View (tube, rainbow, N blue to C red):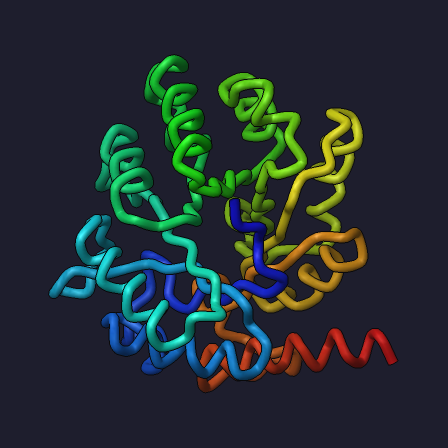
Length: 257
């Protein structure tokens, strides 16, 4: 099962479009071009969203399969993770079908979204993913989600060192601006639950890089990109996703120095 990349670029997300940023990748060709550029400056993974012909959020096993093939051909050293995000359009049953049927070996899944399915269905889904060597990264927005994951995930998967988590900072705060301090409850939960998972952070708003550096200080990995923020450390708007990745790599290098 593939481990999480150190730096995963999330170049588009489900909600933004080119009116929000002209360099937001929408098509497969644009996403591949973005992946190549981001890989060249240090991103070793890509969190993939796809869109329909109108530019709306899409979950489609065949479109995902096409994107994965293109990425594996053009940037084979880059790990590819697909999203199953519902955006109020898709049911848990359909989300699980996408995770199992797209050919992806890395998938992100929100336990909050799957929680409306039966516990039996979610448990069976997680076990089938393990059997098919599909790495599921569980999206957690707060410690209530952490508790829900502990209830729903089979114990052998929950306690495994290969458990993959994403702690999301700032998504549901009043300001929609993440703060590094938002990581603390998640770290306390990891300690209380006696877990040593493969985990990462993403953060919304202008303090994205600050939050990701806090993740690195505690041994976590990082997801960065236009899905979460258009801003560089300077407060300027990045021209491209690759500029954000490069800016983050500079922050890492400066911290080491």
